[in-house]
Amino acid sequence: MHKTLKAEATRPPGGHLPSQQRRFNSFRQEYNHERPHEALGQDPPAARYHPSPRPLPQRMPTLDYPAYFEVRRVSLNGGIRWSSDWVNVSHVLGGEYVGLEEVDNEIWNVHFGPLRLGIFHERKLVIQDGLSRTGRRTLSPMSPD
Image (cartoon, rainbow, N blue to C red; front, top):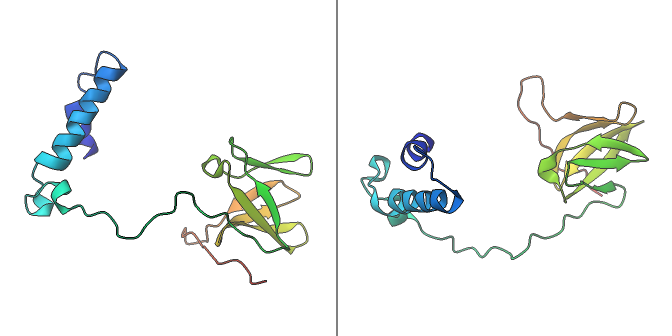
């Protein structure tokens, strides 16, 4: 799909932003509503699309952390303050709250809601990600209250 988009909507690029946007819009219309797709029995994607019957909230609920967690808001540039020091978390979580659960002296599990993201080493001021030796991400639920 990306190769097709690039070939049909960016070569050559539009002369200015509104022109390029019109090319993207035209491509999207054709790709989703007109062009047959072999994997869909020659139907266009729009013919197979059905909106979810499940209503989505206007705003996601606030994440609650147990009272014994340290809760920090991740800044838009991806970090939190720990005392007067800076600790990088992830810019993807900018504006969100993470919970830190002390599991040993100066060792903390870092959670985003029910997901354990990694381990914060307070002395080193670094968060080690939640990758195991096999390279698979380990996600564990928060400890119970």
